[in-house]
Length: 171
Image (cartoon, rainbow, N blue to C red; front, side, top):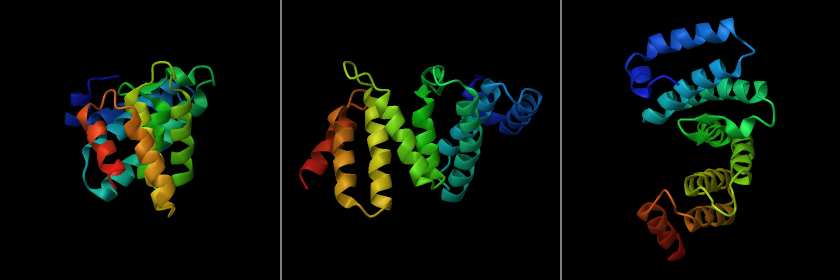
């Protein structure tokens, strides 16, 4: 992947080149993955809810294409910004307001966690996606269970995960 700083600083050019590469190699998952990664980066960098949703939809379009073009055995190796693709897709689907797909990809990301050596970031973030999906669906009890589960493993989150867990347990 190109340097994220360059992608942001010359985002229009990066977008143009990646779209062209995608057109030239429509069955090549790497171009879809890189194009989706650019949209994902823009999604994460904005605070504007409309722009975030727009970039999330762009990320979903291309990342899902990369997912579909990659065989089932190769999918666990796909990453975006160092995170499992299923995790990035869960967050993008949530921001794009597709709760069913967000739930599906969050569950896939959690299913890929090594029980002996869990990745605290995946456990934390995906349980929070599942909690927000439950909350959006009106199920506050399930939301709390997921949010608490996300705070159980705070590796990679340090005090943030532990403090969040304490705050929920005290309520």
